[in-house]
Image 1 (cartoon, rainbow, N blue to C red):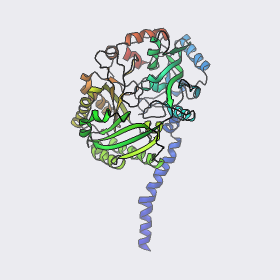
Image 2: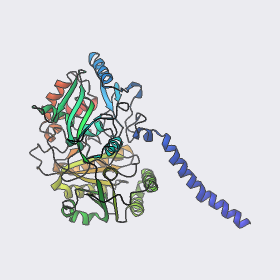
Image 3: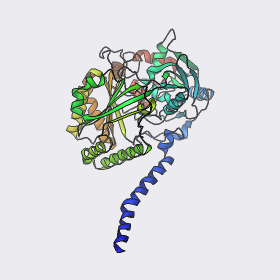
Length: 487
């Protein structure tokens, strides 16, 4: 009996209690602000990494276009400032405001679906997950999506958010028409079919500097399934055969998940298919993956020297097996698990420089022993002609070929993350890199840098001034980065 009692006590202490703690944590997440924000039920009080605080006392939540017009008109007349606050899934200060903030959480839903032209119009606050589920009911699907599903469609387009695909552009490249409230409170509609398409090219990726988007019309396709092959290999082998992997005509969408300390690379090759859904990830797998990553990043946040061992364990638990699955397009485009809190930057470089850029980033990590406790995601994006798109090809120093986007991800103390990002930017600067508008941005970037990266920058500046003559939509970050002054 004594032995049985001790065994019972041992099981309760070391087995049952940890399980109950995990279950309790899982239940409590339903009342946490990140969970509510991701489902459009709350306005984010902080940016994704908690670095930027938003003053929710000044948030206004219009539910109609007329209400948006009224807010902007009042700000124009009284020389106030406005920024639109989306899901908080951003690491730059593009959405920060010391004055009025607009949330479009109450301005969502499908406006129109043109099945003949394969075009759909959504209100700007609609989350991408809701866009996908609504389209599915219409027998339609987005042409491509990024890894995250809870961003608003307006926020994703305005910052140049992308998925992966050597011949597929970023989300803004699917846009055919935009409707927005300009800085004077007027409703403006721009379309790719306009005789003067300059305003349209400026508006596709505008970082919210032309106005508050109210409606977005995008090109879509009939609903389709995707077949995904996940292969575990070494980073060296991946880089040696990069073109064979990425340019394989059998697969339209290819991406890599890279870990530098243990030199592994998980290759995701995906193609359209007529096969039915097979082996989708379970809710349990999504739950375990999320908490495995969460625990790993928190341990190495406080004990950085354990990063190599912890990332080896994450790889062994979650990614060492080769897998094959078939699912709805958006279920594969989007990550199947929610992402733990982290910091993110991004290097966007000519596709031809992919190997050189990745080797440079690896050298930065290893030489400086940065605690990169997260996967580095490598994706590929087709070039475009949008003026402020990070993948614009209207630049003599960039070829007309596609681009590679290397997502730098870490969860570390702010000064360490800052040093990591800046070291990577410096090591790849000779490759004429660009940055993602919604991710970590070098603090010393100025209008001269932007003009070199974006040859149509001055044209954009003219359109911006015509749409927002008083600078209603400018904040300190935008003024510093673009050199715009209050009018």
